[in-house]
Amino acid sequence: MSESLAGARSLLARAERVTVLTGAGISAESGIPTFRGESGLWRSHRPEELATPEAFRRDPELVWSWYAWRRSIVATCEPNEGHRALARFALDRGGVTLVTQNVDGLHHRAAVAEAGDRASEPAHPWELHGSLLRDRCFDCNLKSDAHFPPVNELDTGPSRGSDWPETEVRDVEIPRCDACGGLLRPDVVWFGEALPTDALEGAFEAAAVADVCLVVGTSALVHPAASIPRATLRAGRPIVEVNLEPTALSPYAEVSLMGRAGATLPELLR
Ligand code: BV8
Ligand code: ZN
Image 1 (spheres, helix red, strand yellow):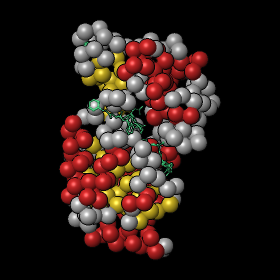
Image 2: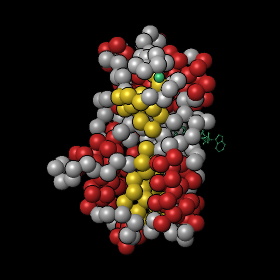
Image 3: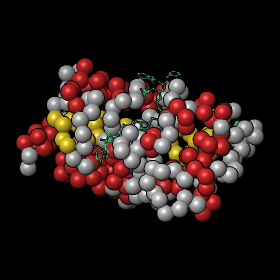
Image 4: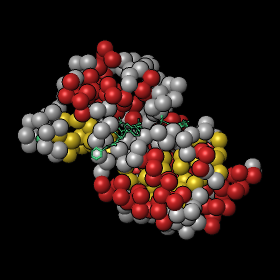
């Protein structure tokens, strides 16, 4: 076992309370493109173009069909060994607060799978940026389950990479709110929008009292999520990072484990 893995394991073994912050990197091995990697989602489009309320006002069909395409990918993905190792870790010991920037719902699916009939309702992670599995009315904010278009309607063709087949999805009909007839949007947090208060406060409170903050698969560029591990640092406690490459947080990490989350987390958390 490498020295850094042994170091990280002993930090976690001694910790009573652990806060975990994950980003798109933990879902990469499930087949969901990340945002900034070489095959990143943003490669073909700038975030400002798609993940903002202004973009939705300007071209709701463009934004809606980008999310419909992403939903069609998420619908065919499964949690990977990284999600499942984290779910087991949280189930097997108390004091673990899972916070995610991801909107794919894979952490919760892993928790349900790992809990089996062990727990009535496994803990939901704090979803800082909302969820693709829900819609919300753009006008009155009424929430509903996501209106998944039938995948054949999307005709996304063979490619599941990040080259979004824009043409085939343009004619997707945007569903409307049952209560007020407004256009529905995915229940995710767009740039320039506030994060859900309960998730944000819950995450910062947990990180402030955590003995270790474990940061997995995030470039740590999007705020305020990327500031959460700093609450642990301010309390004089360490950050352990799992990533394929150095990130904005690496200089502050006690241990930076370079490796795929799906391979590293089962080793680290066993
Ligand atoms: C807000 C949901 C105010 C939608 C997303 C200038 C400086 C600082 C901040 C700002 C600024 N200008 C503007 C801001 C604020 C802005 C921001 O942070 N911008 C950034 C780009 C600079 N933030 C906001 O606008 C936030 N809101 O500030 O509101 C406010 C307050 C009160 C009232 C009103 C307003 C809202 C931010 C949320 C935006 N929504 N997503 C959707 O998904 O479509 S952000 C999006 O990026 C995703 O949620 C994603 O999770 C998130 C972060 O990206 P990562 O998860 O880190 O993914 P990334 O691809 O970047 O990195 C992947 C990592 O994984 C890499 O490091 C890679 O090496 C690694 N990896 C890959 N494979 C693996 C792996 N690691 C391990 N194993 C592998 N196999
Ligand atoms: Zn409405």
